[in-house]
Image (cartoon, rainbow, N blue to C red):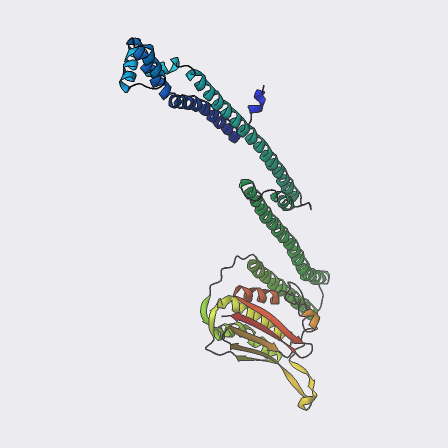
Length: 440
């Protein structure tokens, strides 16, 4: 006998399956009884008519020869009807009369027994197969749930462990289609997405660590210098005015450096965090370049550096003029800072010193707009050309030893946000050309 514990389960789906299966078996048994009667009635109609005719002939006192012919099937329909009337007179209906026929009840019971046994046997197979499948699926889902839980816990602990997607791929091979295969695919997709998000969060965390470390390092130097200058001035109240003025000028330079550093870092952080809204309009590139160069014209003049513009008026494209002007200004500022006012003597020009130049030129092709910012300054070493766009990287230059190293990275970020890219080509000692390319 089956234990009742076998049917006890917390699964609503399994309980529903059991109830439906048992009801189906019960309905099948009921239908077996109904079908057994229908089949029996269809098997016995000739036998029934013969007996009705025999009863009517016997009641009428017919001879033995007539009765014998009746049993052999020689009778009229009127005899059958008279037999039914005779049985009705004694209180037997047509259906009740069938039960008086020899073998009718036995046939009906036999058909009912066969149908019921078939329903019970088939239902038992379905129930046990279904319960076994439920148990198998429950085990698979439980195993998958444990693996997913272990994976999530390992992610929260930031530990390296076997990815749940590998296990999913192994188990998914057992199923080519169906709900379980869909479940495995969903878990695999979820694992992949969660893995990428964890990697992204880890990357952002490392980025913030490096970012804060870089900020701390960059600010520490000018702050230390400021502290030193003020300590010297406080310790020596009788310091000569010229010496005190020199310290104040040095302190002002450090304050300006900190101000530029903080402003640049805030802009770069906003760009990298993608919180800046760029308003792109169809604007003349010449207007944007002139706006960028204007703040540095006097600086270049005092340093003895000429700035030449060759940007056609007809070049227009979608860009944020204010931000792109900022990027171009950083490139112009970088060119001025790394170009001396009077360069070394050039023998090809009859020993006439070459003047420092910054040239800004633009050209348009059917597929792009290119902006070139060139100088004839000290140039960049080939091994450094792949590094200069990194935040806080400073090239080895005697012209600007105290640079912060965010101008070029900020310029590249702004140009990329305007759907462009920034490249550099330089020859050490002969000059540098930055190319901002924008696809149309």
